[in-house]
Length: 380
Image 1 (cartoon, rainbow, N blue to C red):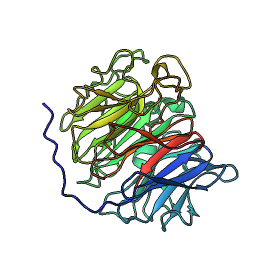
Image 2 (tube, rainbow, N blue to C red):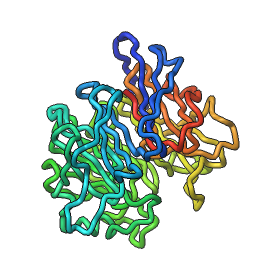
Image 3 (cartoon, rainbow, N blue to C red):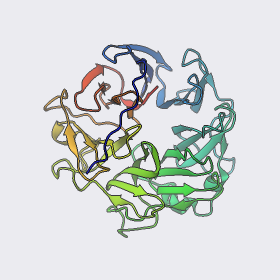
């Protein structure tokens, strides 16, 4: 049975701002306090590829944006006034000279632990892990990963069939321990560090890898997105190229929880988000997992799927979506939740639409149209 859902005390309603990273720039979408009306603003960085924009929950003012610019190449921009002004990092993520590797783009950004207000992490393509201790102004490689003797094997020799290149993503910092960090790599798998990145180990037991000769390898997997369960950092959820999984620590073996999805839809997708307070509640957004590429909604009928019991059962949520002939999908960073009550759920599509639900996915409506291909959506 699903755990009883507790509701926090009512607080004054506050607007929600969505930061929308696209193939051609950054936009914001800000709600009224009731989350009924939204105002679109932007763009920033028009013409630049923006892979991720993340607000810093530690101060409520700082934003970091990972961009690939036409003239500057891959870089990171920082704003300390909620996006009014931006300054480029003086030393963006870059591999060491002589390493034989070059950052094509910074793909993922994660704020550090609450006790470390200046710390940020970044994941790149090809797979590299970087850290900033000064709020994103300068970046240095995490040598324990980037220089690890097994790195090349873990990262499939830096040669990967992932569109737009192999990526390090889903950097998770344990809210109880700043030294405890998880990462995901496409391809490579999930890895864990208990010493702030000085050493790493694979954490992939129980994950299928149907595209590899060995069905259960130690590494070489293709996780698409990794999330902490709401309110329980001892539980992790994973959307993988080969299904949906849950890991309950201190366990070491992932449990497949996507088998309850309809066979006509499957359990392959890019994004996954967890409820901010309820550990058993999560959403995924499936895509056609066959040989169709670029990816599309299964049969052109998009839907989110929600579980209220940790993945044992799933319910389709499509009220408000097109019933047919909607051939977009949702990238791994392009789905998010807010912290309101009830939680709002939002996503951006490959066709440039932003959709939202203010009732935890029961009903949806389109909040913005005609934007470029959307890579990421984050809520603040």
